[in-house]
Length: 103
Image (tube, rainbow, N blue to C red; front, side, top):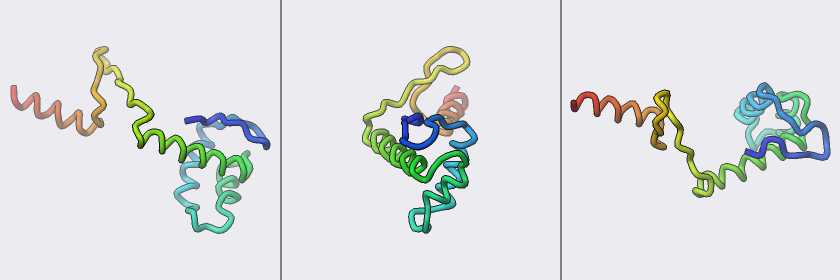
């Protein structure tokens, strides 16, 4: 995600705490909330309504790219150094349980 996008107001960097507050505020203040971006900015702290709205628009653009398949899902290495598939953790656990019960 392009999380450090520059705005004409304030700092471009976001802390982990601000990111979490941003996520929570989006859940609280939906699209029908009056003064949504002002409320989100207040919940985040240190950001303007314009900055949080821009961050939201970037998030939506990133999601579009992910959902359209334009962003490849990485293969991660497990603790043994082997690549794991793109399956979710739950799917991997099911597959592991199935494989161990079949042996």
